[in-house]
Image (cartoon, rainbow over all chains, first blue to last red; front, side, top):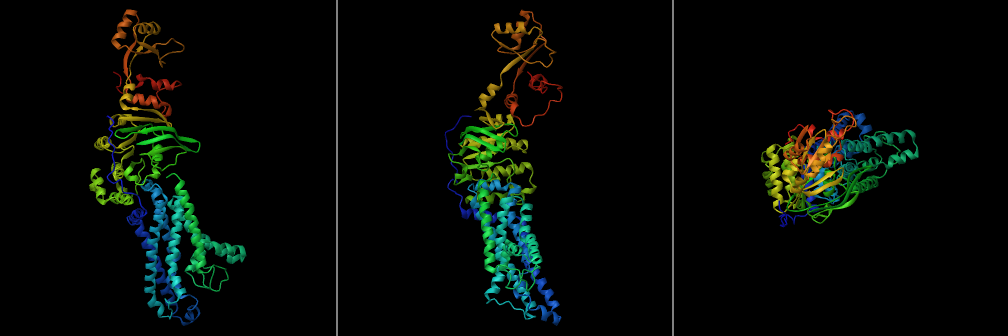
Length: 292
Length: 334
């Protein structure tokens, strides 16, 4: 009952929060959830699976010499390997969103922000951890896709030249593009705090809107529609994967010989990067100010 | 030590916490008592830096929470809603938190043992009962061996053994010189655990006192007397050194003169003797001891968020009906 004058000091009082420690914490958080393994597994499966199916289908079609003569050169060699990115990017983005929205939906965010009350280092740590995981898995998957499709393609004299910078850039484009979109999704997750909301937004921005915009641009031929299409984050960002004169495979409205103006590879990727940086900055401000 | 000055939180037009000022001292258990919706959790979230105060300041061990460099060793908190991802095991949840401060895994295992979670430590939290979830929350609060503990409704969902364990733990932690701030909407729980109590209602501090004083103030003894000659008896009582207060009588008809008195300063036998001498007939003579729970109910009567209508009472004057101890059949009369 009586007030004691003893002051208690924690034996761990000198253990401070550091960024390196938040990285360890976020790394453990990521890998201790089953959803991470599922999402990354599906991402890898999409990249490798699409490459295999696309290569095998084309290979079987090219057993007809007439088809091979017409189509063999129309598709760039790297496209056989990279074709799975359009869907892999959506799954990878889901992981980015989940690292944040999973905490809000469960209340874990309160424990996280109690342990790191300055808040922003938590966001930076999440971005680093998501980037490393996604880049690692997508880079490895692309390498596997290259290795497994190589025997199929070489039979038709289709060769990826790893000494050609443009070829390497397109292959490297898969992990780069998927990683940046996943970081974009982290920021969307902070802003929306809801898993379905964030995933719908990312699918809209990187899948639905570009598909619709490219159709409108092709159909109308209007300069403004073409400009809108060109500046969309998805259309700009995926230029890093595609080759000159060739359009993205899924936004099929732009076939070979298309005249839709698009950015060149690195400029387009930089445009996506700029959108992502701006969105992350907004997310950081909101995270810092908002009640948890 | 927790110090709040003019702490205010408004959500739009609704004021959840309205300029509260209080100090929670180390070495004792301080209860934070109030009905649901009184502002307890909001206050605690502001202490933890999770909610931004609309006005005012609050510091923990001298600093705003966000400025603590080693927050888990300064403050351990169990917040009302579960703050755990159900997909992780209990042990991994604690390891994730420990990692932020570089606390050793041995400390994780210590708090698991301390909270009796050994058998479920490697199971996913999603399958935990409310009681186990609460124990995990307490384990997380204790992880940094903190100087200050903030426990929001810690006994919620615990079985009787768990309730006793939390009580003893809170008192033990305070005896080590820590600051222990524990919220509850149950007066009895606070009376059993805390040394000091801060009562909050509708976002305002209603009382800030030692539990001893609160209890003493609460246990005023009065005697309820019903008589047709209330005025005559009242003057006799005053002459004998007591006080008599007419109280609203729900059995009164129309503008009839008051028949019900609350008498303080004299006990029932003395009043009975007085009535005999004054030749006043008594229709009722009931000693009433107001309990701690009643004192708390009276204190917060105006500030409860949701009130259940007294269905037995038809018509107006519901307040007087609710305040009449005679309607309480729970054996609190003595």
